[in-house]
Image (cartoon, rainbow, N blue to C red; front, top):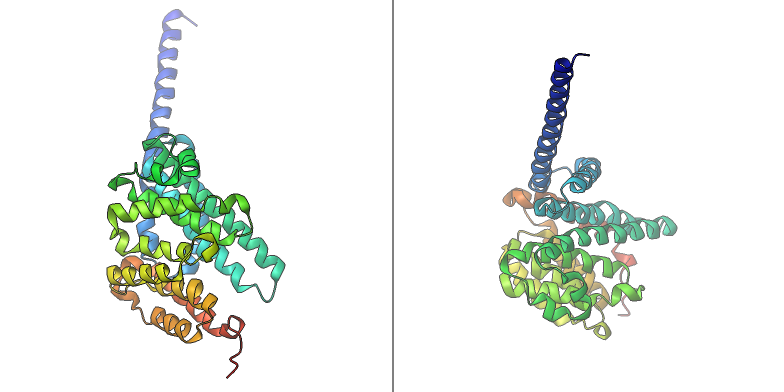
Amino acid sequence: MPASLRSIASLLLGTVLTSACSLRRLAVGGLADALSGSAATFAREDDPELVRGALPFVMKALEAVLSERPEDEALLGAASSAFGLYAYAFVQLDGEALESDDYARSEHLKARALALYLRARDYALRALELRHPGLAAGLRTEPAETAAGLARDDVEFAYLAGGTWGLAISLGKDDPALLADLEAVRALLRRALELDERHAEGALHEAMIPVEALPRAMGGSPERAREHYQRALELSGGRRASLHLKLAENVSVPAQDRAEFEHLLQAALAVELDAAPDLRLSNRIAQGRARQLLATIDDLFLPSLE
């Protein structure tokens, strides 16, 4: 091939390769934008089973794009939200529903939910670590001091990390390594509350309920859990059905207060779905859980001696 033709061929090849790389970056960027905004679409969905089928694809797509853009905070937040939602709504709740009929399968699903919660936590912690290097390690050695360095624009990631971490601990109470992280969870959520207690209509107070509902030997306090419930109720205007379930399952059942338990579940069922379109999916899931709990209430409470 003449030198002139070789030069032209080399130039064309370089142009094609450069265009391919540009197109790849463009595709990844477009997909990243779409995926990072997927949470709002799912939140308004009225059909949880549709979300059950779609969410795994979104989760793996998020991970694929994160491999190309590992420091994209919007993607990290979306991944944490997606993995946390899937773990609770479509793995943990499935496991708890099977507890009396298929104990082995139930335990398998709960273990899987725990692992997914930890993945959700790690994505949120990675975002915080980008802003505050050394934060993850510091939370385990000096939790309160480390969390004190968080700012108001860190609240969402602190909520995601602390909330999913707390859910993992609630499932893994027999794991000493997880229990050792409890103060880190408390520090994250308490600092977030200091910075913006109104975040997501009281979601931080709601996340504190299962943490404070742990046994007193683990630093829990049913009284503080109830205080968080009342404040979350005020901030949400009664629009969050999940709030009632948090108190019912974490406080009413251990206290064996059946009347309060039933009252709270009825309150969850009374939440109007169309009054809060952005909470439609979580409210639909919570109401399904409430119906399941009412159907199996005799398994949760000892017979009255009266």
